[in-house]
Image 1 (cartoon, rainbow, N blue to C red):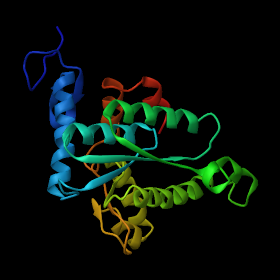
Image 2: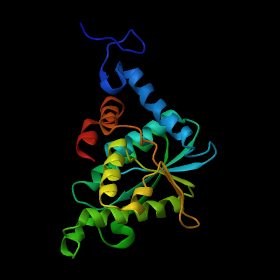
Image 3: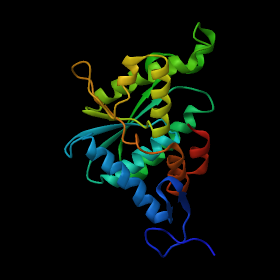
Image 4: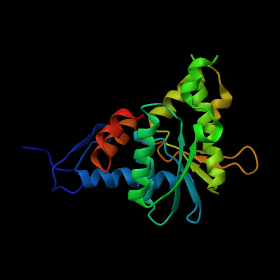
Length: 231
């Protein structure tokens, strides 16, 4: 006989969370997930009720779950999805399509930076440069800068990113053992701007394990292809 949900005690359990000693049905898992986002934002004072909040959305499971979860947790807040089209053949067009579908479903404004159209190159072009073996590093640097550019265009005071618990713990250990103290400090839930006109960077998923973002995207609203192939 299937286990029943630990919360509602009526529906069949679909999600097992051993660390929390919970077996949850789909509805209770959704509440559990979005309530944790709400508590994280409120506990760390990530944004105010009247803030215009930019959400960096790549099209991958973490950022898609972040935007959807924030909208569920704070339905009255004003969110703007920020997307960078990297021009990677066979990948970027699918990412952009999925982001456009999600923002239409959520009725959220979208700001896009098209790398090829606006700057005349794409990430694919890096294979012919000195950075061909460090494309991921170059791509990360470019995206961080362009999300800040998009946040400025959208006139947002806060930029939310999809860094999850696994990401932060991994980066924390790596920076600690490499004695990279300046980067270690940047892993805070709320990162204050270094310069005028920059945004506050916040991590609403900092307490959320990566696999729960995958479960959320698979179970609610999103196509499986997006959650499985777009990281």
